Image (cartoon, rainbow, N blue to C red; front, top):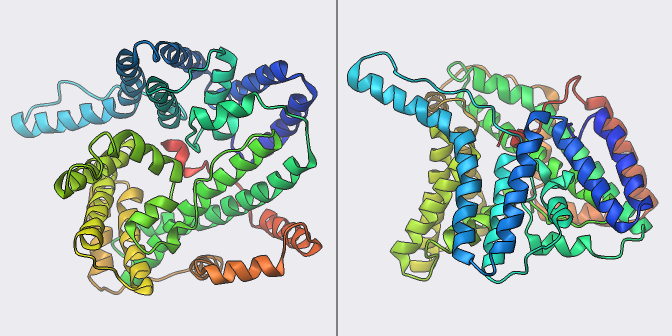
Amino acid sequence: MNFVTLTYAVFLPPVVIGYWLLPRSAGRWWLIGASLVFYGSWNPIYVPGFLALLTVNYLLGLLAPSRPRLAIVLAVCADLGLLGTFKYLDWLLGSAGLVWRWLTDRPLPWSPIGLILPLAISFVTFTMLAYVIDTAKGGAPERSWSRFALFVCFFPHLIAGPIMRGREFLPQVNRPRPFQMSHLRLALPFLVSGFAKKVLGDNLAPYVQATFAHIGTTSTVGLWLGILAFAFQILFDFSGYTGLALGSAALLGFHLPRNFDWPYRSGSVQEFWRRWHMTLSRWLRDYLYIPLGGSRHGPARTYLALAVTMLLGGLWHGAGYTFIIWGAWHGVGLAIHRFWSRERGFHLSAPLGWAVTFVFVLIGWVFFRASSLADALAFVQGMLIPRGGSIEVPGLVAVLLLAGVVFQWGSLTAWLRGVFPRSSMRRALALGTAVAVLVLLMPSTTPPFIYFQF
């Protein structure tokens, strides 16, 4: 059930109305049921396993205060074991098979199993693993199964985040919940902006697809424009999902954390990761980087922790060498930035820092988007070694790319907020006009959000 579909538009209002009409306990079960319907609409076969994993982590949370180490070990085995099996087993079998064939020149004695990746497994396992670890470190365990179940399977954040912490969400379940118009006023801007970003990203998708399908015949300028289009496609797509998730949650009186803060305004790689997919960055920092030593044991250990954290962060996104290289690319970038800024006290000027960071991120996106390592290397080679070739940029794509770059200047967005202040008729008219235009721009088929595959 995609957020930007008629099905979801029909699904959401009854869920919201039913929740506010029911008593708190019954409303909680109503949301759990709605969330399972939402999850099962993708593939109902995984619902029983999802509930089983949820219950295992609930029990481990109860165990954590008395047996913290055992609870963490069992949670890691259950959550990461399941994630590893579904997400990486086929890739490992395929890679091992290729090595076997290269060494022996014989047919492969095995083949990938063909496991179907359960929807949301990466986000769900990270959410539950963080809960058990936090509880083992002194957090209060949630003793109500229904409250814990709502925390994990709450449908606005279930499929692609934001990655929630128990201490952020669970207290909200117990709050008094009279409906207020402020819920609607808070939700509407999120829903409209999320819808807008999704539509804009979907309009960039065909151009990105065409560029990556014709790498060898596209000019250097065309390749740069193609990866620029993907940079804004994935930003619009993922931040659009987050906006729709925040808006849907706000209609139900829940607050979810922000996940994006104008990441392409960043003046360094470090700042980029403070602005991009913020809840994942925070998870990687707290549960990987700091346990690996963080910045507490000297520069060499810090650089190693950065590299390993980002390498695993890349692998979390997908089973493939391109994702590993993308993670390693950012790990090396973070280490270099830390060396020059912390150890040498060297800082680029603001415009130059932004330009270097943006180009660095664009090159990284090539590996993230490419379907194979060979395609990624060919794409980067074409970007860095000037060549002629085709350049075909549709008018709408050109407008979106220009607008995407221009709107990275904070002064422009601040000026627009002044022209269209909150709760003003001008903003209401602007939002209404934007929605009407976006409906006209909607593609005939709405592709899933990019991060659904992770």
